Length: 84
Image 1 (spheres, rainbow, N blue to C red):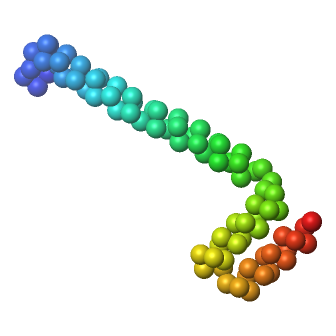
Image 2 (image 1 turned 60 degrees about the vertical axis):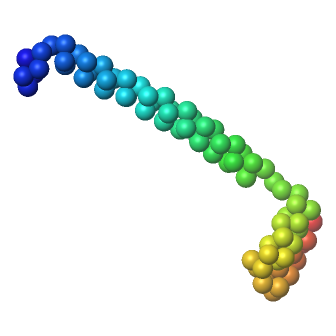
């Protein structure tokens, strides 16, 4: 006996806990795998060199959105062009 319960009660409780653990694992494992895979793709994309055109387009976009000041824009633009 386990806390006044018969053997079959314990088996039912164990079965319910086992099913709960399997459901949680079925939800968590795919999420972790997809997240890791996405992170690896992002890391590879970040490692690839971007073209000068792409960098200048991104810089223009940042300026148009007001993220960088005109002075920062000109300095970064000159640095990108110097790399040619």
